[in-house]
Length: 67
Figure 1 (spheres, rainbow, N blue to C red):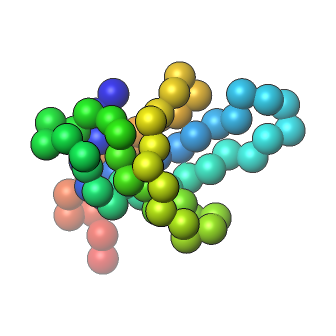
Figure 2: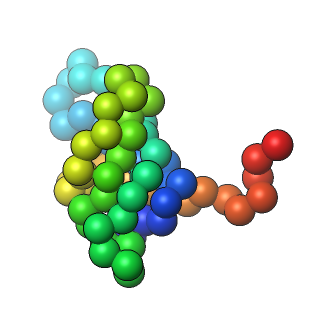
Figure 3: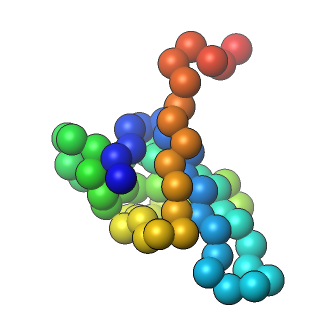
């Protein structure tokens, strides 16, 4: 799994009833985009170091898709 700054991280819980978390990659620890990533979570605003598991996916940030 690779990511770039600005990509969306979506983490789906492995347990029934858990909530989906979304965050934006704000920093890479490796220049090739390999984990871990620093992610700012949309639900708390907290920044954490993320080692993504099988329940996590990266949605690529589309260049020029903003306003």
